[in-house]
Image 1 (cartoon, rainbow, N blue to C red):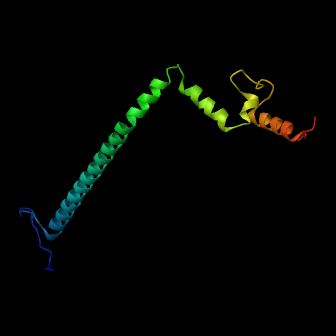
Image 2: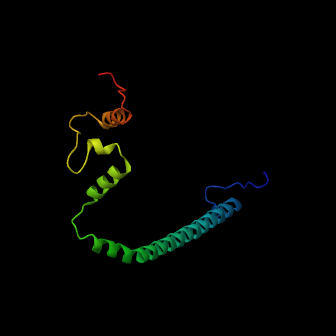
Image 3: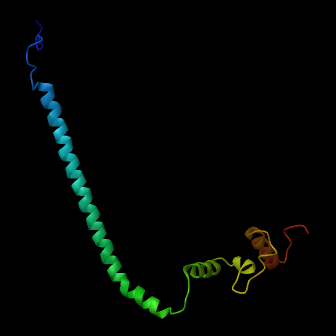
Length: 128
């Protein structure tokens, strides 16, 4: 008989805990404990971040309510976005505006920008 191996006959009971089973079970148990610890740490960190976010929101809320009270006009977010876009991009003025614009003449924004540059430089970049 070889060392470490036993002959098991049909009627013999199998050994319940071999060394490999104990090592595998302890490794699995250790991994599951570490997994639970990491999960707990992550949940704690997420909860802390949520609390910080709520504190920031509470700090900003008075300013937001004051600003909304100042703006009693019915202004939609789309209108605010378009106004900011026009203010940031001077080439938009020719194509769009509160009173319409010349957008129906040009096929796209690039043409509007090129036409505006042509006008500003008093130079025709495109052949007519």
